[in-house]
Image (cartoon, rainbow, N blue to C red; front, side, top):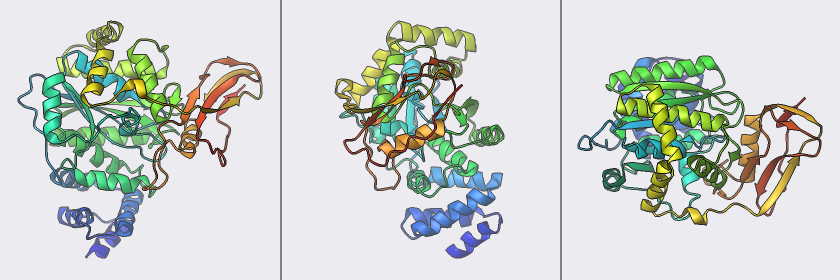
Length: 408
């Protein structure tokens, strides 16, 4: 039966709800092997899925666990998701901003996929920070402080958690149907009334073309309509890294700088403002311009950073104990000129090789390693200027410094 299902998708035929339910629940229950599910995921990557298959798979994911109910909490609950990119730490900034404006935010985040880092991995770089909250703890926290960022609980879409980990190590992360089902099942199960999706496109993202990003956007809005959720999508560039830092502890520290109003107005800061304003616009049902004013005030007044600290304290973390490696390597300019481009994909690969992400399911992440960019696109440099600082382990053998900066 399982082989028949895999073969059916291999030759491009549509799978029924029952067939999808059989193999996906079989995998969750340990009755279907990793190699069998990997074969099906690859067949889906190659041949795609129909809308009906995607609706079925999303339902199967949602039904694999609990669905949170925040109907007793006043206000519109707005959630945000990013498809992932190099240096993307926007959730750490925009969730506190929005929550500080009295819009409840419950954010179920994931781990890294491929070369892209995950919000949960970043939060785990804060010593003591709990990302394994139970449904009851999530409900209490959103009641008490209006903000939760946590990993998927064991009871919330457990199927996605299992498939997510397998996709990460089987080159099946960029499938539009699998991305859509994964994202929307988590957003719906975690009780959001309205959802904003940041779809990254470019060489440092899961999606490489604007056309694919538009397809994903349309698909997730369709799924939203099926479940009576308003979904807005923003397509953002990921050909260059987002902000200055790549690597878990470094990215948390950069997010803190933005919340404190210390960071310059680069592509990361601009995207945070845009996403936060969309969420505030949806949550308060006001114009985008009105929302932008509120977002800026939340940062300038310190309310957003205080909300971040409140969340960290509530989840037992300590930002004063965040550590970055003391071992560094400087990447210097080989010639003078202006930086025309920074290759986000190569930076992602480099970060992974340093130990900031996982190559195998059993790998352990080193939260202290990563990359800090000292120069960004458009900056003038002289030969010998430090373009980037690498924070590395004691053993740095095998690190390859490819052509990351294009200088002319």
